[in-house]
Length: 255
Image (spheres, rainbow, N blue to C red):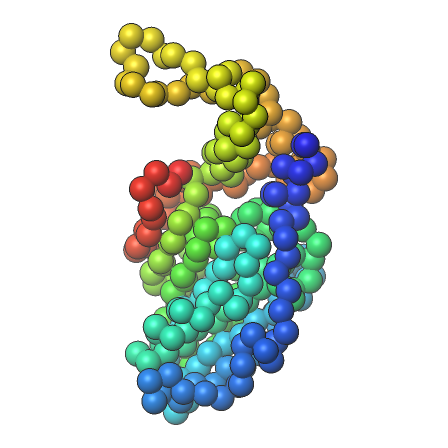
């Protein structure tokens, strides 16, 4: 069972795709605006090749760029909506597969721990492009968490961010996942509900100790297999160090 939970973090289902089938032609139009997609590779700090695509408005000598960062078990193909939204305004879109995802090299994912280095390399490579005027980042889920942690670590040349469905911390995600699965086990469901006292609101819950122990077992499993600590993936802690304007998108009850 613990191996299953560890795989949810380190090796979720890998999305595979055919470049020509999924991304289509290199030259096309969006609302009569001509666009060119250039496929390229960028090597990250760990020596792994990241497979990337840069959608550029044809005829523009300079343009801003938005880097799209996909979510867990996703790939650069997830950027279609962002491409269709921004290119008609003359904003280029750079999308890529994180290491361990899609067509990029790497066997494991880390939900932000190693992905931070991927994004840092992408930003630095775009900063060297003289045609790019400004850099923005649009991240979803794991991609949003990665963007927020990078923004809190370094003074990079990013002007603004859109953070869609960013989680607070990987440890909180592990807790939520554990609760979700354990509630499906009839004799365990009642163990997950503990009254906090007379002042507790109706239905308020508190985790029993064994649930905390389960999360710590997951932490130990990820550390043993992947050599990184889930507690190091904490986007919430990066907020205090981040000064970049950001738009947060979330649903009710998101954690």
